[in-house]
Amino acid sequence: MKKRWDQVGWNEVKRIKWKEIGWYLLVIMITIPFIFPLIWIIAAAFKTQAQIVASPPIWIFKPTLNNFKSVFMEQDFARFLWNSSVVAVASTVLSLLLGLPAAYSISRYKQQTLGVFILVARLMPGISFLMPWYILFSKIRMVDTFSALIASHMLVALPLIVWIMINYFDGLPRELEESARVDGCSIQTAFLRILLPISGPGIITATTLSFLFSWNNFMFSLVLSTHRTKTLPIAIYNFVSYAEVSWGNVMAAAVVIITPAIILTMIFQRYVIKGLTVGAVKG
Image (cartoon, rainbow, N blue to C red):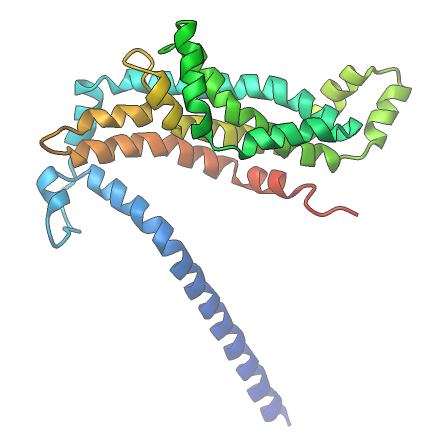
């Protein structure tokens, strides 16, 4: 009898192990298409032009930092990095200042009409705003200014923040505000001192996604900026000429651009997941 139970237990262990192996293989198969381009970009950033275009691909090579030296010394990439930082931080902060109170108002006072208008602005493709946006800023002579870029990035970041925070505020109990009102707090004080401190995951989620959108945005910068306010995605064009493409410099610049995004995502990953799932299930 004991031998039979030992055999059953061993079969169960093997079944579980094969199930785990199958799960890990499935995860690997799904992630490879997403991870491989990233690995290729990072590896190419440390290769020479000849090694990058070699066929078949060269996997074992001596790394070089010449591409990064060229990016920062020959193309003034540090200034483009500063421009992207200014636009991304400013558009995110201003969107938070406007979006958090708006989301709270829509959530608590059931302003569905306002919410629908903001949702429409969020769903409309950004390219549809380019022509009127360019005409407007050219008329008031604001093309190639940080103000124009920040305002255009807020056009997408603000609705994104509002809709993330609406769901988050919907998941917070109203009793918190009612208790604060009983203790003498105004609506504004209850919002600032009670709700915002406990809305960290939602705010971090909205901030992270808004910043990443602005950091990686290409379309608005292509139309509304020139040399003075050129951002990182546009600066990559400096390495593309009629005769050839300097792939080493392009890959090095791409690594510079994606590194802050990867670091930010890794740091706030669990907050982003929590912020996106809060309010998804109610009742």
